[in-house]
Each structure stands twice: as C-alpha cells, then as structure tokens.
Image (cartoon, rainbow over all chains, first blue to last red; front, side, top):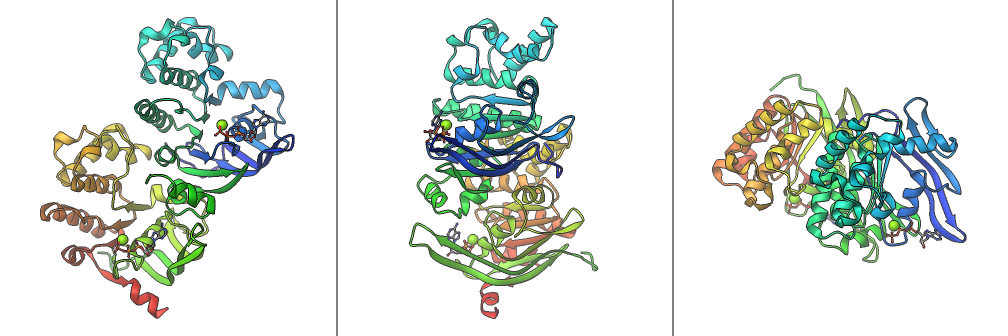
Length: 261
Length: 236
Ligand SMILES: Nc1ncnc2c1ncn2[C@@H]1O[C@H](COP(=O)(O)OP(=O)(O)OP(=O)(O)O)[C@@H](O)[C@H]1O
Ligand SMILES: Nc1ncnc2c1ncn2[C@@H]1O[C@H](COP(=O)(O)OP(=O)(O)OP(=O)(O)O)[C@@H](O)[C@H]1O
Ligand SMILES: [Mg+2]
Ligand SMILES: [Mg+2]
C-alpha cells in the first residue's frame, strides 16, 4: 500500500442531513485518500450510519457535497451525477458492507451467485470465469469451497459478513464502506474477521470508511479517526493521537471510560 | 560520522500541556519554550527526572500527542515540514518515510506472525515479498529472537522478546530520523548489546536519533549529545 500525496479519493464538504427536526448529521468535512482507512466512532444515535449512507450514495443530503475521484473525470459530486452513473460507481468503484447482512446479500440465491453478481452487473457474461473468480473470493475470505452452492440462510453471522466482503471486493473497488462489520459476532469471530478485513485492505490498497463503536478495533484498523456526537464531528485526527491525547471533552470521556486500548 | 552533517529536525519554542476537561478543565503544563535541533548522525539523549516530559516530547514530535504552540520542523522528502501545522495525512506520510518511533510497548494486530509483522513495513512501501522476508529474518536474527518464535504472533512472548520485536519492526526500515523511548528497558546485558549495536550502526550511517535511555551504559555507548528538559524549562 502506498499512499499518495495527490488528490483525495473522496471529498466531503459541509455535509448535513436532517430527518424532519431531528439532526441526522451536521456540517461534516473530511477527505479520504487512496489506501487510507478512516474510522468513525460515537455513541448510538450520533449519526454514524446517516453519514455512511450520505457518502455512499444511499441518501441524498440536505446540504453540502460529496465528491468522488472518478476514473475519467476526476472529482465529481456524486449527487449531481445521473442515477445510472451513480449506480455504476456503486457497483464498481465502491463496496458497501452492511451492519445487517440481510441488507447486503440476496438471501434467495446461492453464495456463488451472490459473489458473482457484481461481475454480471458490469456486463461480464463468461459464466465459467465468473464462477472461478467467485470461488477464488470464497477462499480469500477463508470459507469452504463447498459452500459455493449453499444459500446464505444456512450461514452463521460471521460467514454472512465474509460473504458480503467477498461480494463487494470482487470488482476491486477503490473505496469500501463498512457499518459495524463485526457487531453481533462473538469475540473470536470478530477478531478473525478484522484480521481478514485489514489484510485485504492493505494488500489491495483499498480505502475504507469503517463505523464501529469499538475503539480497540479502531486503533488497530484505522489510520485516522473521527469522533461523532449528536450528529456532529467533535474531533478528528490520527487514530493514535485521538486515542492517546484526546482534545474534546466527549472524546476524553469516551477514551477514559473504557479499558486501555 | 559525517563532518558536514546537515540538520534534519528543528524544534522551536515548543509547548505542551494537557487540558483535563472532565476534571474541572485543569491545565497540566508539561513544558514550554523548548528549542533544539538535530543533525544527521547525531544521537541526542533526552535527560531529566521522571515526569519531566521526556516521553511527552518524543510523542509530540511523532504526532502522537497534539501540540498547538511552537514548531516541529522535519526534513522530509527534500523539504521542510512543520508537523505542528501538518494535516494527519501529511503526518502519516512523514511517519511512513522519514520518522520512525520505538515505543515502550508492543501493540500489534493479533494473529499475525512475528515474521510477517516485521516484514510488513517493507511490503507496505512496495518492496518485494522475498526481499522483505529476508530483511525481516536478518533483523530478527540480529536481535536474537529464536527462530522457533518467528511463525508465532508475539502476544505470548516475554516482555523482553516483545520489546525486541518492537525494535525490529522499526529498524527493519532505514528511517532518516528515529525516536527511541527506552528501547532497552527490559533487556538483559546480551540483548542490550544487540540493540546498542543496531543503534550505533544506524547512527554511523547517518540516521539522526533522539532517545530516552535510563541505562547509563547504553546512554554512554550510543549518545553523542544531551538535552536536559528540566534545565531547558528553567532556562526558558
Ligand atoms: N430514517 C430515519 N428517520 C428519522 N430519524 C432517523 C432516521 N434514521 C436515523 N434517524 C435518527 O437520526 C439520528 C442518527 O441516527 P444514525 O442511525 O445515523 O445513528 P448511529 O450513530 O448510526 O447509531 P447506532 O450506533 O445506534 O447505529 C438518530 O437520532 C436517529 O433516531
Ligand atoms: N496522555 C496524557 N494525558 C495527561 N497527562 C499526561 C499524558 N501523558 C503524559 N502526561 C503527563 O505529562 C507529564 C510528563 O510525563 P512523561 O511521561 O512525558 O514523563 P517522562 O519524563 O517520560 O517520565 P519517565 O522518566 O518516568 O518516563 C507527567 O506529569 C504525566 O502525567
Ligand atoms: Mg448505525
Ligand atoms: Mg517516559
């Protein structure tokens, strides 16, 4: 993984979203560069999922902009693109791993078909190749090949998350969004999944935005950390700096209220 | 050592204090008006009693602690950058290419073998797998980590072994500037000597070093100059 000094991959400016009177998130600013992992932490209801949806093309913001470094035309506001353009980006350059695997998988088709779907969606029609790529990815996420033809319904929580990851990474996206990818999994499964994510991300040089409330996970996985409270970013910086020398009262409380990380 | 050594780091009027918001926002001043500079091939020893802020100064230079007043100028990529004002993105680049730091304790991802952990910094900067693994083996050997441990994650290693793995992860690369926080604290005499040799070797090749060494023997062996924080505070 080499990190360049060039343009950001994603540029978020003054981003706000409200649900009626309720703040979803407000006035958010940050950049992400190639190969960088950005962690987002904050208490329940602080706006993490809202932010992730806004920056991944799933929720149109009330104000502000989200620009992505497109391969051909450079930085472009994703909400000023046509719907088909945005959909293409979502299927190729981006990946989204949902907190609830049922939101990110098709439960009524086989694991293999889930993994191969994005290849088909971008026009790949050679089924033999799709199948062999899919089984490669099943292996990369450390799953048994015999699972290829099984339906997701029969999978454990950890396996479903692996399947989501394989399904997303098969098109070699440049930016992956993950919302609490390990919540609801038991601790040892969490640790393995995180190792897997980290290994894949650093080998492939993929940039990543990961939402989690686990500061220990963030210390090991993310380069930079953003702390949210009541819809606002109260602090952002290098992950180790935010955790070891937090500046904001809320971050100081958050860091001191947990075991050493 | 080179005799026309050039400056690679210059700290000017640096101040660090901690504000404890959840304890009535009291301000804990650590130091103020700290200035010094560092040249290639120099090993500057930070001295001063416990609690004066030696580790805090190293961490501030590394960007692990945030500073707001003063300058930390680093020669990086053929030009000077002031880390006090740099973005996190730039600091990451400085850390990747220019500034290495050995902290007192190892903190790594679980489940990854020692050999892979040590090879990773090289792989990250684009070296080949073969080269990276060979370099990693070489440094582990120099630090006398038994070969039987290389394939294991360091989580179960002894304190001294973990410390040497920590040193290996930094020394596997050739950083122009190194920050060392008591790298020999929990080592026996033989292993201490291995670390001293590594430090001297790097220093004589031109690496600029700032170190905290409580052990007088180590300090005398590697140090070329001394900066006493306590004295600097009173002079300021
Ligand atoms: N569709 C919606 N309609 C109305 N309010 C919403 C909607 N989605 C979220 N909210 C509100 O917006 C705020 C932020 O919610 P969000 O889901 O972004 O929080 P979060 O940080 O992801 O929390 P958690 O850690 O519990 O997942 C909350 O107060 C929530 O109730
Ligand atoms: N993250 C932090 N938050 C608050 N105070 C801190 C923090 N880190 C250090 N300090 C305080 O800063 C002062 C200097 O500590 P530091 O660890 O730099 O001393 P030191 O010179 O390295 O001491 P020693 O020789 O014992 O290691 C101490 O009063 C310490 O409590
Ligand atoms: Mg959420
Ligand atoms: Mg100290």
